[in-house]
Image (cartoon, rainbow, N blue to C red; front, top):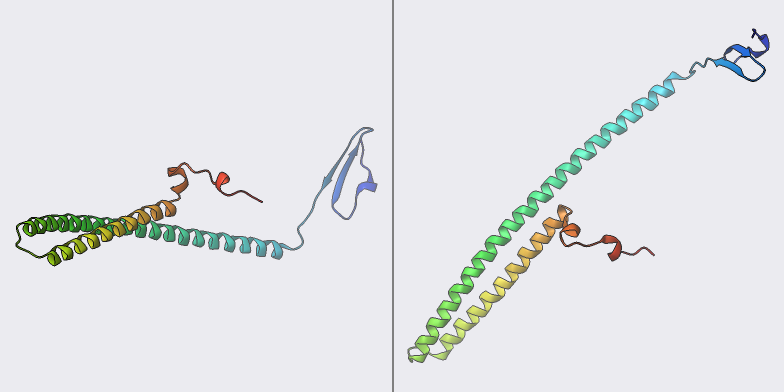
Length: 161
């Protein structure tokens, strides 16, 4: 084991120890351009801050979409309940007019108008029920529970070409 001056080079190899089967070298390297490293570090920190701001924006957007979904469900439910009351009232009114028609106290035109009102109330109730179900599905879609709730496998639905 000895000092060999042939292994001293400009790259910083300061010492070398030789054995017949192995060799050890120590290499010292000094970074020449610290400005480039600090610029890269600054750019990476900027990218991290931008990603944090984007994450906060997406979280706020998701929160707003969930609140809007819940609010639309509540609104659709109120409309559904009111149309149900409207259907019940129109059925009772039509039944009462039918009794009065049998007694001869009203004309068939009045009964026809009541039946038309009852049909319109039923149509409004069906429409409100549809909007309520759409609001429920939209909330499931926003909260990403639609596929799990209905036990759907996306891979069986969408097949890759």
